[in-house]
Image (cartoon, rainbow, N blue to C red):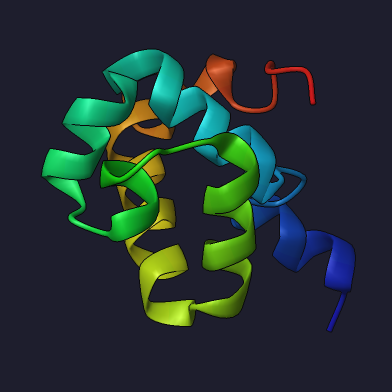
Length: 86
């Protein structure tokens, strides 16, 4: 099995969690993001830093954020993937 081939099929390959959260915040804003995914790091004094800390420790929350990113950003505009500077 060729690992390079598998990564080409993964729409999140090369996209960091920081890029995902930043893109979602830029697209939706914190208030809307907290409404879509009701987790405390998005609803109470939100920041990229605190959100990353929580999402790296909490698999179910990270999965929800990645799913939203795929639905809202990658599927609507595949060229936008990876265009956000860290």
